[in-house]
Image (cartoon, rainbow, N blue to C red; front, side):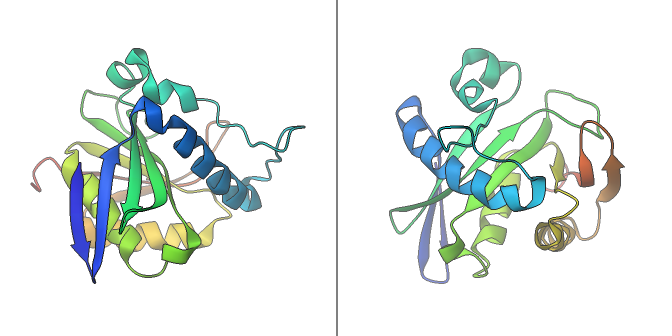
Length: 181
């Protein structure tokens, strides 16, 4: 569990245990709704958006082999979001220290307060390795956020490629923070 104090806010990042799955699933619906604007996905016939590997974040295989880590984010004891990490990569070799910030979500109320940047930097610092972060081509706000945060975090020491294939359509940034910490 990590605690961050930022501009009078008390931010807590905690590993989401299995008992947090229902909360994470609920927050995931807000995230998937937000991203549907860019990826064009619709909910199923029950009005629920699907996240195919959600349950894998709480399995032994998911954690041990796929590096899946579900992180719950709280501010001043209120639930505000989550982050999902894994070790899948589109542009860098997969190793024991490969890290992918697969998904991160902060409720709209808490955006544009530099809280997301502080949270992301704490996550990067907590997990040294070769990182990859990707954004959908249409999500220019996310692209701007990530380019700024990663540039600041790495002092410009990162790579970016634009992918357009069956795996991904959009920019992918990568960097190594092993020597930074």
